[in-house]
Every structure is written in C-alpha cells, then in structure tokens.
Amino acid sequence: MRKSLILAASLGTMLISSTAFAAAMNTTGVIKGIEWKHHAISLSNGHTYILPAHFTMKSLKKGEKVSIAYVVRHKHFYTTSVREV
Image 1 (cartoon, rainbow, N blue to C red):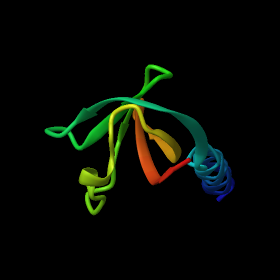
Image 2: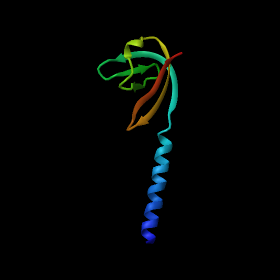
Image 3: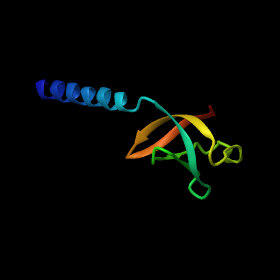
C-alpha cells in the first residue's frame, strides 16, 4: 500500500511539473520567411513557429511585425495565436 501511495505521489508531481512547462509564452518579431509547405513562419529571432492548421497564411507578409503566443513541445514552437503589431 505504501509503495502505491509513493508511486501515485511521484506521478502527480511529474504531471504538475510538465503542465507548468506547457504554459504559453509570447514573442514579437519581424517575419523573415514563410514556409508554405510546413505551415510555419520564421522570425527575426531565428526561430521557426508552426502555425495552427486553421490559420490562414495568406494574411501574412514577409517583413511584417507580429506578436506570437506559443508553446514548446518536443523542441518545436507551436503557435496558439498570431497578430499583426
């Protein structure tokens, strides 16, 4: 019984800590490249951000300043929102 309780507490701690890392972060930058095939954009900070499947990429332009909310999963940046600044 005690081993089960310790295991449950350990798993709970891991779940709580992994949820904290999934919090959305924000950045602002200039669009340096648009990757139509991968549904992504590259910003002046050197990172590439994968856009949501429902996002209309036609509204984006190279050289445009944008603000992005994103989460990091498996070393990839997934955007949750993109807006022009």
